[in-house]
Structure formats: C-alpha cells, structure tokens
Amino acid sequence: MFLKDDFWLAASAFVLVPICITLAVPAGIFVPAFVLGACGGRIVGELMVVLFPDGMRGPLGPQIYPGLYAVVGAAAFTGAVTHSLSIAVIVCETTGQLSPLLPVLIALMIGNAVSSFLHPSIYESIIMLKKYPHLTELPPSRISVHTLKVEQIMVKDIVYITKDTTYKELRELLISTPQLRSYPLVTDDEERILLGSVARKYLNFLVTIHLGPDPGLTLRRRSQAADMFGTYNRTSVMRTSMSGHTLLSNSPMHENLKKNGLRTSLSFHRKSDPSLAESVLLDRAMKLEKPIDIDDLAVDSAPFQLVLGTSLFKVHTLFSLLGLNHAYVTHRGRLVGVVALREVRTNSSKFVPSFIKI
Image (cartoon, rainbow, N blue to C red; front, side):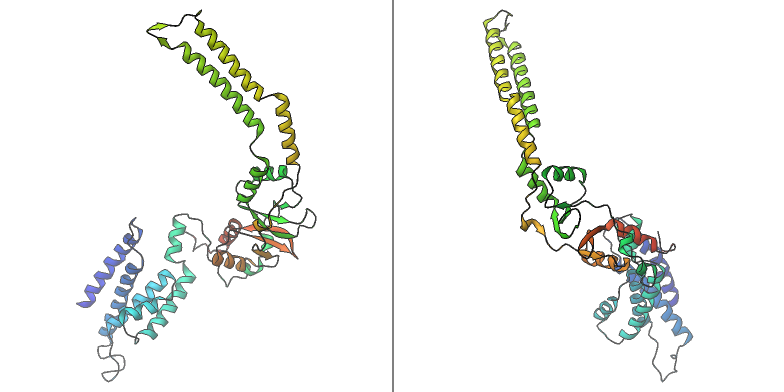
C-alpha cells in the first residue's frame, strides 16, 4: 500500500517539478528537487522493506527505515541537480540528527560526480537555454585546456597610449574605439613597457578640459541661431494684427523691422568674423599637437596581467573567480596582447562535450 502511494507521488512529482521550475514565477529549484529525490529514496526504502522484512542481517541486526532512505535520496538528487556538496549540512540541520550523515555524504558525492560528468548543473542549464553569456565550466581532466596557452587566444592588435601621445591622436583613439572602457599606458611605441591603465572616462574628461568645445561647431550654431532669430522676428511681426487691421507693406513698422533685422544679423556676423574664427581654429590646432598630460593619480599602476605561458584553464579560473573583464598579456614587462572575456568564453565553449551542449 505504501509502495503504491509512493510510486504515484513520485510520478506526479516527476511531472510537476519541471513545470514548477520552468514557470515564470519565483517557485525555486531546491525544494522541488528535494521533494522529488525524497520520493525516489522512499520508493527504494519501501522496496528494501519488502525484500528484507527483518533487516539485511536478520531480526537481531539493524532494521530498515524507509524514512532514512528518503533523506539520503533527497540529498543525493538535490546535490546532483545543483552540483553542490553543502546539501549534506542542510539535511543534517533540517533533520536535527547526525546518524544519516555518512550515507548522505557517500550518496551525495557519488551523485555529484556522476552528474558533473554527464551534464552541467540546473542553473547553468537554464543560462544555456536562455542564451545568456557565461563562462562554461572546463573539464579539468582534458589535457587540451592545459596545453592551450594565452598567447594563442589573445588579441595582438591592441590600442594603447603613451606619454608622447598627442591630444589629436587621443581624440581619434577615443572616437574609433567606443567599446573600450580603459586603455593601457606604455612607455613608448618601441619598448611598450606596461606602466598601467587609464579609464576612458578620465581621458574624455582630459580632452574636454584641454580642448573645450569645437569652435567651428559653435560658430555654425551661432550663425544658425542668428538666421532663425531674424526670420522668426520678421515673420512674427508681419503676421501680427493690430486692432483687426493688417500692417501695410509701406508701414513705418516694416522699416523699423528691416533695420532691427539688419542690425541683429550684422552683430552675429561680427561675432563670427573670419579672422577671429581662423585664430581660434589655429589655437585649437596647436593644442591638438601637444602631448597629453596625465595625472599619476588617474593611472592604475597595477592592472591585471598574464604571462605568455598561462594556460587556458588558469585563465578561465581567474576570470571566473575574480570577475575580470579583460587582462593584459606581458612578456618581461612588455605589452604583447590583451585577452578579454569574449575570447575566454569563445575558446572555453570548444572544450565542452557535444552531449553536454544544449
């Protein structure tokens, strides 16, 4: 009777748990997996009672308790689903007993090892199904992940700044690389000894403070504002009615309007004098040719660096544990490349077995 009830409970949980996990509601994963594992363990316990009613060692030996099998099954199944070993502690705290600790640990380690070999955890599987960017776990037993070096996956065509970089070169660099958030600072173009990294925000601030707004753009805006202002005044006054009578074309108001419009136009054109504009542009061109002046406080003197002999497995571990976005690759202090999270993710996905990919 109990075996039949446990079987139907396990069958219903086997159908309802995937629905509960995949619903767009915060139903959780731990408790449904725990219940399903407990149902499976209870079935095994009831079968053992049927096969050995007096215990495996007879009436004088330890008896079989299906509840203990349920606890072990719940821990083993939940640990296999989540790839976690802390389930043993949770089970002991939940039951308040240490007697099932040894069988729970044995079942948990076996289930975790088998599940890790066959498939990723439920959390990583959901990430893969949703197509979220992530770092796939590398199998440590694969020799390829240890023989593949960072010099084979790094980007060698890198952009950098030196202390001799001019404001013109810096402005062009910022415009051409909007996706970068920091830039390496090296000694010169030949040796390229890495001195640190500078954030993009500081470089934008440096260019803005030193150069200021574009004078050509300012003059063009001023001229457009003058034209729009004069046109608006002329049309608005000509369309204005006074006491229900429209102004005549030979009205003195038109003469005053023409004089005011001409005076406004002349004042704006006087401000945009060609000689003044040329001097402003010449001064800006001279500023563009000056080398940049970077404050030492704005330089990160200890950016994360890797050497050429670093393996992909070690790079993957560092990016996963430290949450790195990129790392510079150096050889005897000389900057030779950069490896970003995209390169690590692309090369790591090649070592995942085909039956694990979703």
